[in-house]
Image (cartoon, rainbow, N blue to C red; front, side, top):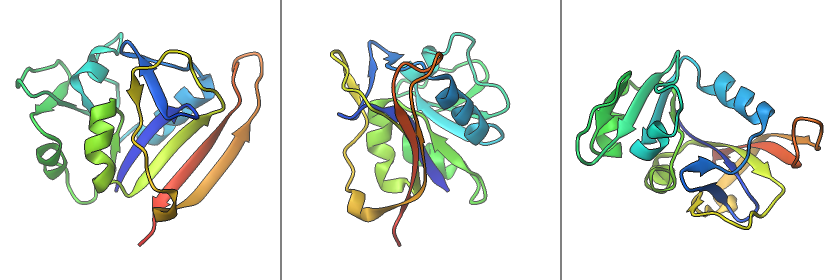
Length: 162
């Protein structure tokens, strides 16, 4: 199964200057719970944004057109080759950035989104538009603001209709 996982604003914004727009501890916990033990595929800039390098307890796969190597990660020059390197039983999570999400949308079986009730003033990376008629919501959970979360948000899982 191939899943795109992201935290997105109401206008689909996901980042600014190679940084996430939102720091939501529950979103980070969910990300860790869903991706641990599985394969994560990302672009080079996303990998380089991790302060401690490769994420532990996951197979880290980085897409890099120039064939650079990254400690703790496998590198492929294109998404299709990276996906083919995975077994059919492997759960694959596409974790960004914007161009990788765009390339992966046609492969996706599921979207695990944190939809943040906000439209940021500054953004330069966006999750691709998708036709919600082609997807069914299989899970949703609303969250209000609290001492650790300054924005309302909801977890929504979409599964592609057959």
